[in-house]
Length: 231
View 1 (cartoon, rainbow, N blue to C red):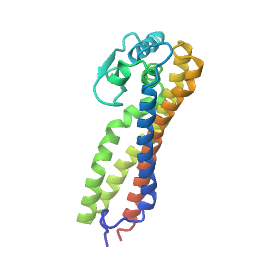
View 2: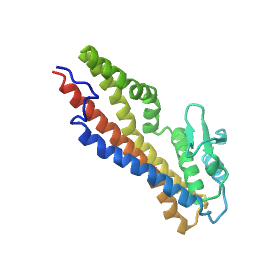
View 3: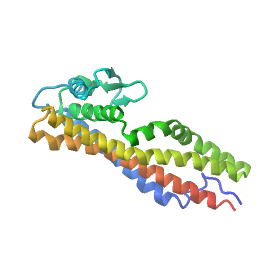
């Protein structure tokens, strides 16, 4: 007998619920920490945009533009287009949070510049991971309804790539944060008593990636358990 993946809570929820709670906590933590240090100005008075430009230039990336983008905490480095984009709160503000996030994204640009392998791997599997995370439930649901186990297996395999993407993301993000702190110190952007504050901002952001990985792994375990209950 096949079981619908939506029937009841299922045994896999014992893994998924704690992961979801962690993800919710991580989102609250990053927002509260970012907002806290967004109201604390850095001693040197640099804006996030200035810091990003400074770090890129001192690492030989004069060709990488720093652009303003909309949204809240939408900051990112685009390795395909070789452009660093910062939100208004980061680009225009001179807070501890602003320069920390800007330096982190510049850290990703440095990774790309030096050929950091985990970043290259993440960029390579990103399209498959994106498709897998979107198509998984369609394939699994169709497999259960039509009683075609191979469809469920294909969905799980696609989702496995999405999980691998989340796992690879962790070293990429932690390394970018390490580079950010190093660059802020070397360039003299932050003074000694601001380092811990900057680390708190980056650590809070890193927790969201840990939570995302936990949710992905828990969801994969749930899918595998549901698949095994089909007979």
